[in-house]
Amino acid sequence: MPATTADTSVFEAIRTHTQSENASAFLALNSGNSTFTAPGTDGVVVYRRTGGYAVQFGGPFAAPDACDTLLDGFRQYVKDEGLELVGVQLQRADAERYARHGFTVNQVGASWAVRLPEFSLRGTRFMQLRNKISRAHRNGLVIKEVTADDWQGAIATIDEAWLGSKGGAHQLEFLVGQIGGEPQAQRRLFAGTIDGAPVAYISYSPVYGGRAGWMHDLSRRVPEGSPGLMEAINAHAIEVFRAEGVEWLHFGFTPFTGLDASHELDGHSPAFQWLMHALWAEGAALYPAQTQLSYKQKWAPDELIPEYVAFDRPNASLAGFAHVFRACKAF
Image 1 (tube, one colour):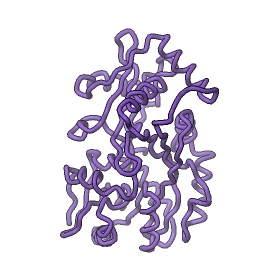
Image 2 (spheres, helix red, strand yellow):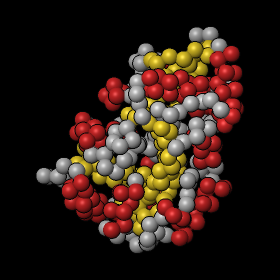
Image 3 (cartoon, one colour):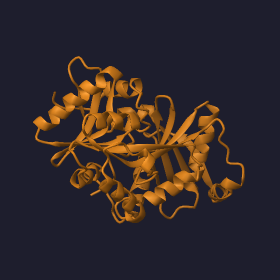
Image 4 (spheres, one colour):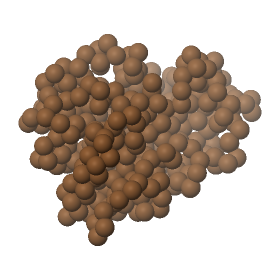
């Protein structure tokens, strides 16, 4: 059926159909996404059309007995539209399903998660992290949980400064969270000020399923700010979450990270596998994977969760992979 914009039915699907354990599922609610449904089928497919491709986010968010039917229907719909299908941020269960359906499936990166009940910043492994956090507080950082409405102007100011420091980079979309709109009621926002001036914020999105909790999502800081701003805000949020009994903090997907031959499926593309390792080593201009991973590893994550890309063809497609980044407005 024709695509529609994301709505409350998508929220119900990601909250209910969690068997794939996709910690980034809340990104399905981003504005600009389209959805596909099939009559009599309990679930949705979320995607964006870019160029000659339909770039699917995750696998079908659907009842277990509906996933294959929904995938087949969407696959046919994409072909009828004259497009080629590529899926990204598939979890292991999704990846295995797509491989069974004849897709070429490769690991594209990983996401990371910290179990909170046992988490503590004590010990020598966190000494540098504690020092950065202490420095931010000594410089006058004040942290509190805020609403997006109250902080709308401050967010815009921080975003403008942050993007300006990146050489006028575009705001990324699709695989990155948003602030505002109807889904904002489900998110949490922690922000920092120094001498009353906004200097940084972190947005957290809900995670459903067996590793339910929150995902460290969109984050920004003023480029000339104190060291340790993001670390201090995240540490504050962790203590709030721990007091609430939250089990997991997720750090989201980073492409080109966590790559390991043991994660690959039968029938994967060796050439694409090589490319992912090359982009990890030399691809900072495309995406700063090493910088992103360095921040996540500061928190000593307990779980590395491999994530996958799937091409609806007998081999991997460099053009298809490039269109994932086009969908994100990376270029």
